[in-house]
Length: 106
Image (cartoon, rainbow, N blue to C red; front, side):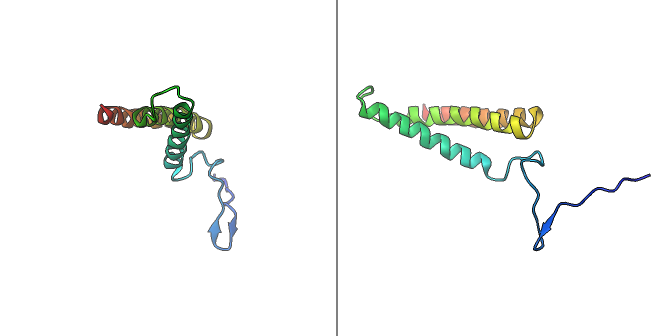
């Protein structure tokens, strides 16, 4: 006995499957999150430098804070969309990348 499943809707020959409902983050999400995290972190460190809280712009601090923000945001987004197993895989991958960046910053 088999059950029939409905095919995803097709509009003009292009499948219009909702990637959020499919349980996968869209391609390039990690790069967009990384770019956004680095921009937010750099803006924060620029504000610290303008307020004379620090001696100047700290590029190493901005990169490290940006990668840590990236780890957290990517894990939360993946946990919401893809579930705990895939989110943990992404977290471990991003933590290895963060360790590599820390090693380069020293």
